[in-house]
Image (cartoon, rainbow, N blue to C red; front, top):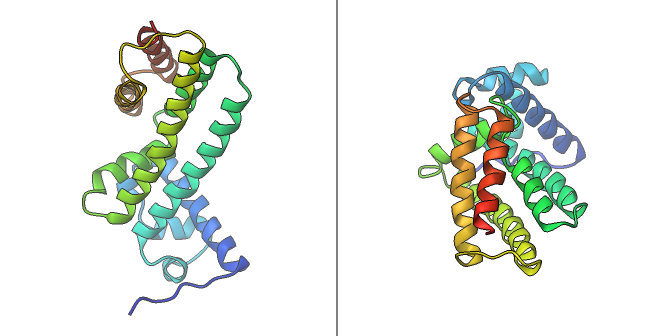
Length: 197
């Protein structure tokens, strides 16, 4: 029998507090090192109290990815809407996609989620949904560039797939501290210009 988790505004506030604690802990150390006790301590709770709101550490991490990605998506959508020039919109997309630095908690969570998604259905489902939202924004931005006169060597979906693979590779190098974030953004912009011959 699955235990029912508490509902209501107070429970939502406690879950949000736990998620914020998880994000802060993840910024400072690898996801694998962030244990339930550390999240609980940052939230000012006991580990058992965290488990009152979440079924497990993994459940905390899944919710943390969902919340962090949701925030990113909202900021990205607003930023893209403020830009009318198609190439500038693609530049904004790149800036929002790539990690801010090697301690970027959302990218740390994504890397952990990717590694665990084959064995963890919640991570896999969340990853698929979030990737679809990123991809839709990229396809729309590429479509606007084509409508404005840019030429693509391939169809929109193929170019979007190629660009996501390229961006993911750059992100891994930023997270490994091999490439500075600004350098990664410049490389991604240059690759986009090559795609939009």
